Each structure stands twice: as C-alpha cells, then as structure tokens.
Image 1 (cartoon, helix red, strand yellow):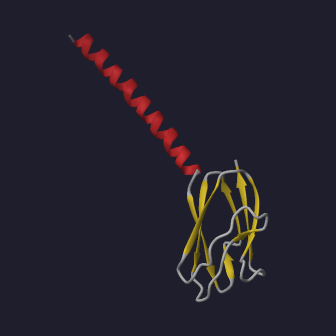
Image 2 (cartoon, one colour; image 1 turned 90 degrees about the vertical axis):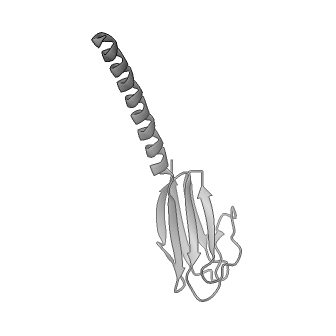
Amino acid sequence: MCGNERRRGSGGGRAAAAAAAFALLFLTAAAHAEDVTVTIDNFTFTPPALTITSGTKVTFVNHDDIPHSIVDAAGKFKSKVLDTDDSYSMTFAAPGDVTYFCGLHPHMKGSIVVTP
C-alpha cells in the first residue's frame, strides 16, 4: 500500500509541475503584452518616445484643458478629438516604428518602437 501511495504522490507531483509550467508560460506571455499609458498635458505627449512589444495596448489620455487628437504619420490610425480626460486606445500588433502627432496641434509629436 505504501508503494501505491508513492505512485499517486509522484503523479500529483507531475501534475503540479505541469500546472506550474503552464502558469509560467501564461505569465510570460502576459508580461509581453501589457497596457501602457501616454498622457497629454501642456501640449506634450509623455513619454514622448516609447518602446513596447507587439500586442501591447497603448492608451492616450488627455489631461490638458483643450482638445487634442492622435494621428499616425503613416495614416494607419486616427483618434477622434479628445476632450479633457478622454482617452483613445490602440493595440500595436505589428513590429515597426510609429510616429504620431496631434491632429489639432501638429507640433506635438511622439514615437513608438514596436518590437517582436
């Protein structure tokens, strides 16, 4: 009977190890695809330059007291006009360099590097 208990115990150990491996894989994938916030305040994007991994969602939040918009210089995306405390989110799936600006105030610029 002691031998059977050991087998059950080792089977449980394998299941626990498999569960731990799955959890590690899941957490590693989740760590790569995170949410990042870019704030808009005093006619500035903060941070002005950002490096993220593909699959990351970037949320732009306008904390200025005047409207702004986010426009991709390559024409791939454009937000609606954001009033104070409005936000716009974009998930960046493809690796590459993204340059963006405010559609209402083109001197406001930012960049995002998306890595695999």
